[in-house]
Image (tube, rainbow, N blue to C red; front, side, top):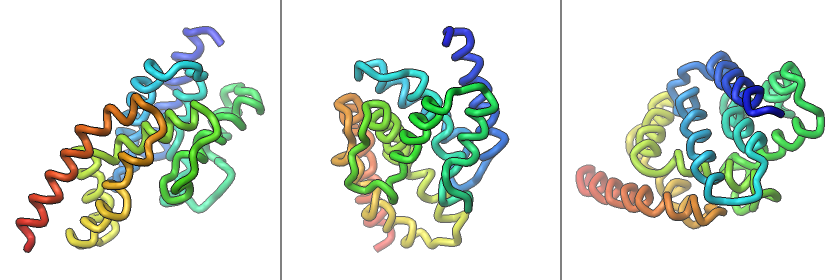
Length: 194
């Protein structure tokens, strides 16, 4: 695929995500997908040997079939986009395998089988750390009627564990500062709500 065609495909994928996810107020919106894509690009610049097309498309499309947002399975939305854009069945399957390796709740303790899967999983997990991770936690909690205290539990159930579950050295380096920020925030919050 030529660079020009790949850039158009990525642009079309972003537009498709905007149509599917829009401005979902629970933290799984177009802006989240774009941050994951940017994180994946940063990681893939450092980690060698990956298929950049697979990384880019999987990162952008990773939430278009998320079980928290949609009732269907088998990557219906991702497959519809990829098929409509002439992506081969083989490449579509590869992209969907990467997408399926991203979810924290479905893949806890499972290491992705490919470098592309490691990169996109890490890119998504980085967006759950730091200031943006805090904002997304409370946005999701608010959308689902959770109290502040119930939302804080998510820090212990997931966010504070992420740093040690990252796959790539590049993501681990990025995570250090974000994890420290989370620890500082949670310590201050616990002090204030006692």
